Every structure is written in structure tokens, then in C-alpha cells.
Image: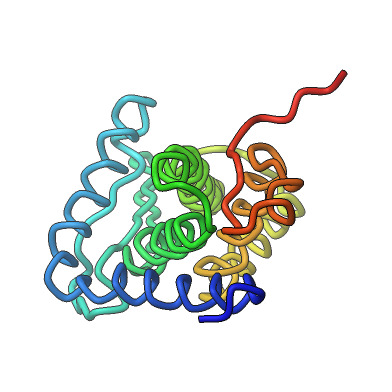
Length: 205
């Protein structure tokens, strides 16, 4: 592979790593989905929302819809269900983020440290998306009073993030670029003949 074309080398690494991360889904999907639902339900109880928020397997479960986020108002009996897939909401963003950071031509120990950092940011973005959906649901059933304008605005944000390319690719790329800006010494990209550069934090003078 030509040493003078780092972009091509990066692209090939990215595709290979991404495919390797996505391929195991049929085998790990049920376990990941169970962990996904359990984590949300546990957090809901910790936040005191266990009686109002619950994630379970939908009655008509299918590969792209293996989780149902239900918001309940026990006082009125109102309930709103948001069916979604743990694959699209959780697994794919993680796979894309890891593929992006591991494809960068840096020494492996440094790539792995950056991967840990990016994984944390990606999990926070997944949690934010779930929080937006939960907030919309809780407002819709009257558990909290958001006001009609705010509730509709939150609904629009939720719909924007529901687009698979946004959640699975756009958000991971934005977080990856943020990690690059924070942690990579770009002077080494051009200076190193192997296109391996330091993952050192830039400090302002």
C-alpha cells in the first residue's frame, strides 16, 4: 500500500475494523439488548423514576425493534410507548466510534487510550438520546409539565436523532473529531514517515 497516501490507508483500516465490529451482532445481539434494557431500568430506579419509566421487550419484537421504552403516569393510567432497537440506538454508534478511533495511524497503546475516551463520550451520547426520549414521554403522559411548545420541540429533537445515519454515523464522527482536536498532535501526522503521531494533549501557553 502506498506510503504516501495516508487517507487511503485510514479508509481501508476504517472499513475493515467497522466490518469486524458489526459482524458479531447476530451472536451478541440478544446479550447486548438485555444489558441495554437492564442498564436503563436500573438507572430509572436510581433516579426515582422506576414507577414511571420502563424498558422491556416489545410484544412484536423484531431485529430492528427489540426494546420498548414505556412512560407511565400511574395517577391517570396514561402510557406512551417508544419502540426502538438497541442495535441502532446503542451498538452501532459504539461500533462506528471504535472503528474511527482505532483506524487512526497511531501506536496501538495510544489508540486504545483514545478509544476508551471516545467510548465514554459515545455512551454519554446514547444516554442523552434515551433521556430526550424519556423526557418527551414523561411530558406526554403528564408526569412532568413541560408545556406544549417545549414538548413539541423535544419531540422534534427526538425525531432528528431517530434517523439511523445521524445516530449511527454523524454523532460518532462529531465525537471522534472532538477527540482528535483534544488529544492528537497533528504536527506528527505530516512529520512522521510512518504517519504515526502522538496522542498527547495540547496545552495552551
